[in-house]
Amino acid sequence: MSAPFYKLGAFGDEASLIVAFLIGIGFGFFLERAGFGSARKLVSQFYLNDLAVFKVMFTAIVTAMLGVTYLSWAGVLDLSLVYLVPTYWIAQVVGGLLLGVGFVVGGYCPGTSVVSTATGKLDGLVFLLGFAAGTLGFALSFPLVKGLYAAGDIGTKTLPQVLGVPYGILVFGVVLMAVGGFMGATWVEKWMAAKAARAAE
Amino acid sequence: MGLLSKFSLNQKLGVLALALGALAVFANVAPGHTVKVNAKELLTGVARAEDHVTPQELAAWIIEGRADYRLVDIRDEKAFAEYHIPTAENVPLATVTDGALGRTDKIVLYGDGGIHAAQAWMVLKGKGYPRVYTLLEGLDGWKDEVLFPVMAESPTAEQQARFERAVQVARFFGGQPRAAAAPGAEPMALPVTAAAPAVAPPTLPAGASSGPKKKREGC
Amino acid sequence: MASVTHDVVHEGAAEKARVAQPYMNPYLAGIGLGLVLLAAFVLVGRGLGASGAFNSTIAWLVSLVAPGYARSNEFLSAYLEEGTHPLKAWLVFEVVGAFVGALLSGLLAGRVGLGVEKGPRVSVGTRLALAFVGGGLMAVGAAFARGCTSGQALTGGALLNLGSWAFMMCVFGGAYAVAAFFRRQWR
Image (cartoon, rainbow over all chains, first blue to last red; front, side, top):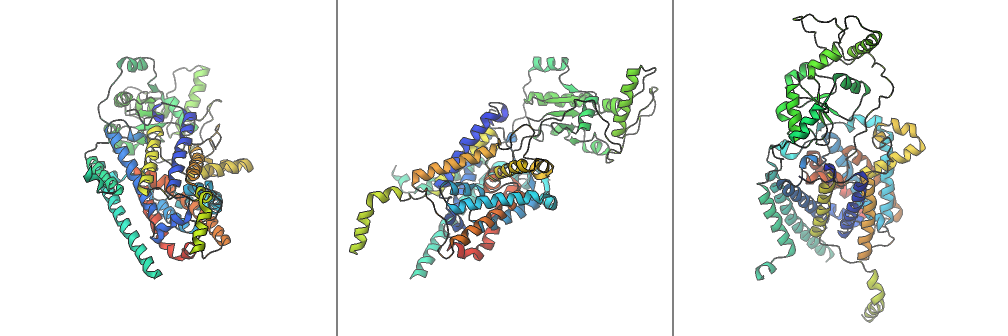
């Protein structure tokens, strides 16, 4: 197995920071390509007119997931060396709900706010500052929220482990769900557009 | 091709995704179970005592609160529950290669004696784990050297001083000193695992430093 | 009719340079993003992220103003390693790269320009206030969840991480639940 290269000693910490920068460029580039520097486009997901957020996100997930599966299968990538964030399910459910609300209120997520700021949008910058303030607030009140922060600690868990389904089958399942979702999304967008056209008459 | 042009780009991508997804059903993503061992390198390491840590070293690390290594108890769950060295995690021998142990971790393995840990050590070294060690003599060594230190017959001043410190360490872990045991004597009772150290950690000689913190990898 | 033709002819070349190009096909953009994520897995054994960079930055700023407090704060101290500058973190470099990449894409597409993204029925001031509050809410959410949409949803999603999928569903759930209340800001 040769990958992940950094973890198998191919290059050191300094080089990994340069890699971080380059990967970041790719990250920001494709987010902007998709139009995610625009809050209006992003929140359109939640008003059902433009489901690009769902399409981009799940295409990215499926692409990386298939890549990981095939590279592991081929013996190139050692999956056990790829970092998995441990599951704190209660904290993460609460966090997810808050994040969803923040998304509609603020119009961005931290990554896309950077993209928005880079393309000159003032609201992107203000969101970013709000995010920084929120982080500081969280840190300062940490002793109070410590309990919730650690709630639902069940360690590192993957869906195949928890559902008892072989990895490959779950991968296929996700692909089916995504492709089905994309077809559904196209239909929803057409329906909403027709609805808007009828309302304009 | 005439047929392909009938479908849009998105449709073609969808079909490609479905095909790759279907094929993935047969994927085996777990690393293989065959192990290749560099015999010369391995045995040289053993001969040079690079493969183990002593109970005293481990005791010092635990007292210092070092967090740069993982202490792994390879016995079964029942034995682990009855007693385990503080800060140890339980990874039963047969599951050692299942993925609980990261390849870049610094790992100290122990069992009841030295044999099982040594076997696990060899397998992990074969899998390319660079920083694996066994606890010399395992729990037996831990009991003899750390929990229940023996007072020498007629100790020199230096031996006396070392014994005093060993007694402090022993008490920290819930053990106690004993006189040289007669053969066939009753084994000393192990401290209850759950009990937190009742005694303040003994002061260590200057120079004891904690290891590097684990690198953050979250998002 | 005549005036419209006149305007169009007049604007011609000068406008062409400033007219934003349409966005990329979302599936292609998603494939690009997915390949970047895969590159991170293969090269460095980790995924993407953004909120972690903010944590590092805040930890650093607090350590400048109140180093003792920063070290004693359980949340911040995790980002303050002895001997390394807190900004010498993988995610910080990645986020700076994201800024550059976004700027690059924006310039290529003619989409860089000062402005405020908002709907027609709300003022700039209101929009900015909501952006700030939304950012703050998100930060708290991301802190609890140990990540945001890029780190948890994208990265964890691709790796079939349990917590990440649960998180992802809650993000969509939370957003759809309150969307109606904030319609005014966007439409």
